[in-house]
Length: 154
Length: 154
DNA sequence: TATTTTGGTTGCATTTTACTACTTATTTTG
DNA sequence: CAAAATAAGTAGTAAAATGCAACCAAAATA
Image (tube, rainbow over all chains, first blue to last red; front, side, top):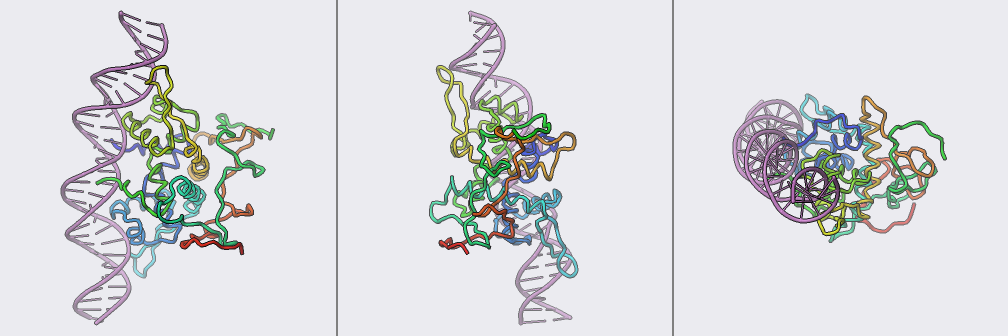
């Protein structure tokens, strides 16, 4: 019995998130979609993924509404897979992951692909967890509020 | 031939990051470690993961220096798996993932576990990608600088 | 000393993944 | 318009990952 995908009722949202995009390929597909890929064959060639696996991943991403399958082409049979808002909302996750990869596993040969913003042309700074006033938070600064009651600022 | 873990030279740092933590269990183990789990049996019970798989994942996370295996206990055979700096640095990734899960896959029954910071007691705001001046960036605002030359701000 | 806990290991059944070849419908080209 | 090429899958098979349960030895505990 491989993979426990079944537990969609895990109380932890990290687990539920990983259920949808927690396998090796899904986030790479989303990344590729963010880079502009839309067609089945684009994904297939750029990722070097097996076709049957790609079919499975794409349809699962469509099911979970990370992507939507759009029928382009005059009489059916040309499709595009486009990011939904839910899919685009993975942007901070992927940027954070990219930065982590760049920091801790730089590619031996070449310099990392730098993400820049169009307005300023400057590199995108590291994604941080900030508090309500914009101050950086580390792991030790936070806790999980189990009972989740409303609280005033201290 | 399952899983293409082999390509550690993928030029994309997202792919390299996913090689280390891109499977279903690894990020959950890191999450659990962030919640305070340290012992083999803690992880095993809390995650409900098979023991042989846990052995494999833990040793791989140790290899990639996301965790370190510390010998506690007087004469060997009591161990703790603790986050390294590299592991703790996954904090933004996990927070972003958690928030994504909360937003798009709220758990039907109960309210989400809220992350708060010790100082203010307030919920941790959503993780965002910001530009150098602290303005939020969306997916459409950024591009990948392939040739990666130095540039002035525009 | 006897028992329990910890941190595994081993064997086997099931599920995923990968690779390759094949298929059908739709464009594109000649 | 016919032929070739492309797009988007299917299908079959082999290899690998996963899950489960049973087993094991060292250390801690009673």
